[in-house]
Structure formats: C-alpha cells, structure tokens
Length: 176
Length: 113
Image (cartoon, rainbow over the protein chains, first blue to last red):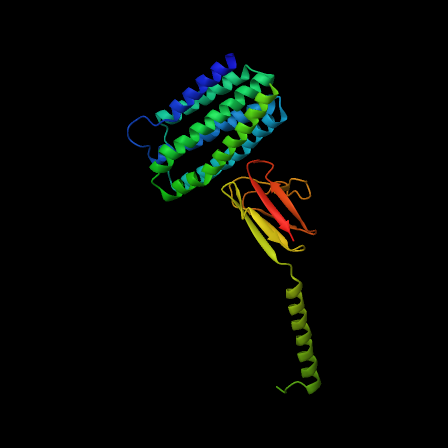
C-alpha cells in the first residue's frame, strides 16, 4: 500500500514538473536543458536498478535505459554544442531534477520486489509524462529545425520504453 | 615507337577478354543484397522475402544499439551500434520472425522462399 501511495505521489509530481506552466513557451536553450535533465534523471534511476533490482528483466530494463538515454543525451549535447546553444535551466528542468533525486532517494530505501515495482511503476509514469511533454510542449515549441528533428527522432524510443515498462509491470503484477 | 608484334597483340587481347569474362561471371554470382533499415524503433521493411542465398543487411540509423535476433535463435546479430550494420544470408527456406532483444516492442519477419 505504501508503494502504491508513493508511486501515485511521484506520478503526480512528474506530471506537474513536466507541465510548462509559465505561460510563454520554452525557448530552445530551455528545451535543451529539459531534454538533458529528463534523460539524466532516467539514467540515474536506471543505474540504481542495474545494481538493486531483483528480477532479471527489471535489471535489464534499467541497463537499457542507461544505454539509450545516454545515447540520446550524447546526441543532444553534440547538437547544442554545434548550434552554440547553452542549455538554460528553468522551473521545469529544476523540478524534473528534484523529482528525479527524490525518486532515487526513495528507491534507495526499498529492496527486492518492492524496489522492482516502485522502479517500474515510476518508469511507466515518467515515460508517459515525457511523451506528453514532447507532444504538447517541447516539439511544438522548438524553433531550431535540427533540435525539433532530434526530438521527433527520439520520440519513438520513449514510446517503446513505455510499452516495454508496461509489459514488465504486467509481469510483476502477475507474479505478485 | 613500333607497334607490338602481332602475337603480343593477340595475347593481350585474349588476356583482356578472359579478365572481362571473369568479371561478368563474378557479377552474375554476386549475391543479391537486400537492406532493412532500423530507424525510429522499427525495422523497415518489417517483412522481407528473399531467395535462399541472398544477403540481407540491417542498417541501424537510430542513436542507440539494436539487435536482430530470430525468435528461434537461428540468427542473432548481437548489438548493432548506432550507424552500424549487420548482414545475414538465409541459407534455408523458411519464415523467421525476429525482434530486438533490447527493445521487445520491435518485430520483423524474414522469409526465405
């Protein structure tokens, strides 16, 4: 029950943190920081899952998140360097970072199947929130064509990760 | 400079013809190559039919590694890096469903007939 409450709280905080509520759309520098932070948050959680997860598929999923999101960030950093854009923190990137730190701190207190469930539930919520942010804010707001193209290119990965996380979530529920 | 003796000319000409014939033969036996692009977390085309002995090359245009792994494990590329490729020649007739072991939502099918 505790885990469920925790997940619900995290989901709400993630959706809230990714919603752009400052009125004006984010500029490219702010989008760059949001993208890099969003990937980094998932890399950090994935690294923890690689070492702490109990189920093999959860461990493998964590490793995959580290690989894929690291690659996305490498491309994002290369692009902004080439475009001479300096990523600019915003309320959205700050709260994403904070949400990620809270998630990792909470996950560190869990172990075994409780860890697996909390991690995967959060991955489902996180990827849903990022997809929503990509569709509603980040892709429509991106001004530079190459930045927009990169966001469009990585979108299917977030979708595939979400489906993969949901499959594992269903397996964990069956096994519980 | 004097023209080469007739016998040398014949020898050269026949040599060229042999080389040309060898090149034609090589072209004829060169296996047909099909390409499947891996991009946006999809195999494209997702279903491909080839003749046994033809080569299939999977080219990864995504930012991260993928695999081409037959469900029955008949073939497995291992990790294909971003911008990397892997090729396979289907030796026997059959229908081979495959997926990416890293991203289980990605599926494709290779048919050798």
